[in-house]
Length: 558
Image 1 (tube, rainbow, N blue to C red):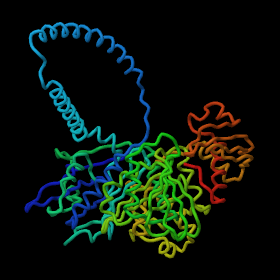
Image 2 (image 1 turned 30 degrees about the horizontal axis):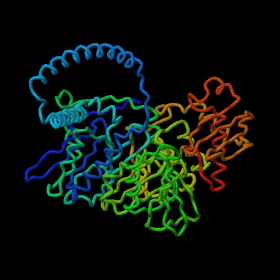
Image 3 (image 1 turned 90 degrees about the vertical axis):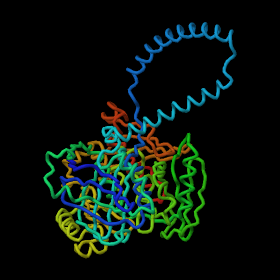
Image 4 (image 1 turned 180 degrees about the horizontal axis):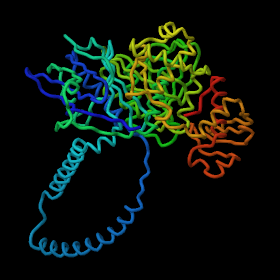
């Protein structure tokens, strides 16, 4: 999708008279007029929370294998040239040094001087790398596919972002009572200009400096074309990025298991992950939830239990849930000292998890997909949680108009206003979330109207779903899957059976990753697992996941 971002000037943090500061955010002029202007009561809290959002927006945990063929060829040639040059220099230097040492002894501080100069060199080299990151917009744009989204709502101001690797969502919710004095505002949603330099400026905010937060409206009121500080960017957002954003929002709007953790528990998780690197699987956080008891949290594969003394779990039955991609939780480090509690929402094993840090008048929400890499199963995984109730297009349109007018509402209020059942309303909410039209606010228990783009994300914009995923889901939903074998072998799960009368089997490791598979269809015979599993393997896995969920056992899909 081609997204147009038009800005007048850059977002800055500027000094004001009286020793204060103004956080001036430049809005996207190609969208509707949205602005906000008020004084922050607690600049430090805002600084730390917006810095945590920065950690999300530049996050990219994917492994990218580089093509090193040209480099290796150059390296081999360079080694030959270097070897010849070094030998010539070494011979000449040895002769000169032998002649010099024969006349005078070596300097007394030779080793100390070498270490000093070595440290000076690497300090300068790191400073150059940091300067390049700050002053190279093209490099920063490669890290940030789309500028953060700001929504001015009746009761809050929301800052949202989505990571480059399509696996982490961040939202900073700043309540209106976080501001002092008069507030100027126009409700709406826009993008704001963002850069590494702006992040560096955020670090200068201090408690003793009165700080104003301004989403600047001035660019909407003047003719900006032709001005030297007006610029327009056309960004090609990949369909997978947009689809992932919508999928996480849809997940946040679904009913789920909720628990509360104290900051010291989250600190224990982050501290252990920062100090240790796993070498084998499973690489998961395991939640053992027993009604009436504090959650038991285990870090695998070490088997380390993190002490939890928070409120007891209030669910109706005992649950054993695992989530992966846990190192993305390190984005919470900046808000950890300010948090009073963490609300955790778990959708199931291998499914998205939502972590909300309560920071007084602010809340920081971190939404994580089931795995760091959103692969071929991420869209199908939510099928287990959504109702089989079909989506009603008239209800979606009615709900869309209602939320656009009222700006927000909880599920009960919306069901009453729409005259719809809970299942029908849930299906409509998921559909609007996938279209980028609303944002779930778990901190306040409501959904809010927030168009991610100027228009709803249609199927044409998001691109077609992969055929094998679509057909695999159809086979599973039609009940055309028979499981003939299911076993655990040394921590690995084996599934075998027939999908649409086609024999297939698969092997999943302790992390739930598909390691081996067989299928008698022509698609698997042609491509194996290079482009993802065929429809029959996907249908078999979905059926195995459904059976595990019905038995109350651990899920497998990621």
